[in-house]
Amino acid sequence: MSKEKRARALADNEAKAIAKMLRISPQKLNLVAGLIRGKKVSSALADLQFSRKRVAVDVKKCLESAIANAENNHDLDVDDLVVAEAFVGKAIVMKRFHARGRGRAGGILKPFSNLTIVVRQVEASA
Image 1: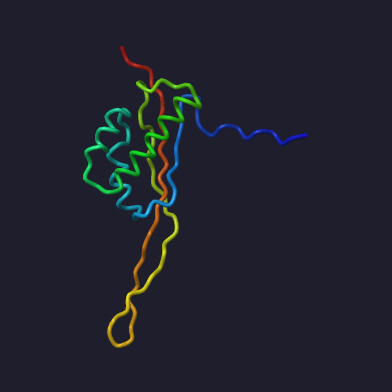
Image 2: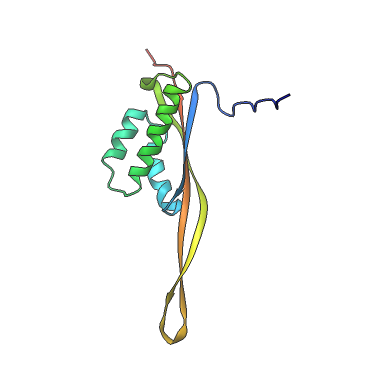
């Protein structure tokens, strides 16, 4: 007797990918995620390719993973995919200190972020 499978959280025309523990603050990552929300995947990939932000490389990698999941795991057409959601969450914050004068210490916070990208297949409008 095995346990019943958990129902799929996404619709049948959606696929997602998650990038965890990206070494950047969620606020900075959300700026790049906002660039691709609602766009077709081909346009989003082009925007990330030519973005000057350092984290655009990691976002592009996550988007390519979501596209591959849609194509290989859910049999969706890559040409009809749209970035339905791109949201950012907080992960851990490493705490370090920087020695200051007169025996004091200055705090340094090194935040990490999680990125989730959901792609959805939309029917091509005629």
